[in-house]
Image (cartoon, rainbow, N blue to C red; front, side, top):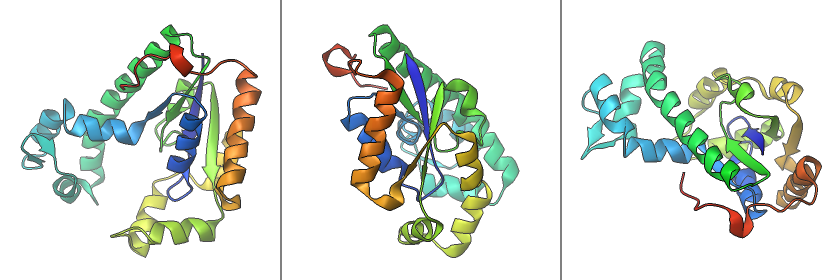
Length: 207
């Protein structure tokens, strides 16, 4: 099975592109979705122990947690040391289920793939990109976002130009959904040709 890493900076259209791979029949593991599940499950007591007062009814409250870690690099590293191994284990279990089912291609949607050293976990990488002005417009339209927050987020991410230099494929979402969907189909064909995708032989899509 080929493991394709999907990544891209904030506002580039990565989530929409991940849905296009899923719609084409490719199993996709969403790291952000995994974090949400873990925050309501096995990660919650570990995070509460490290940052007392951040859970409500056994579930991590992201606002409370943000107040503890944002702007504090040491606290953020402590949080990442708890969460990243759990997300990776979740992704590994996902891959094993589809590998056992004989599926030829699976996607790991990893927002910080290059930043967290995830390149060695995948066979190929696709970077989702967009023109800087479109990226900025998309991000600043989000509730609670500001110029300062955007600048802080981008400062933690590998620059888009560098990601594109390091990747195997680029999908430019500036050209619209139809063009992006065509790029997704082209990448799938280049990687596995006409091989059958998940279809009926895939295991349940739990992650």
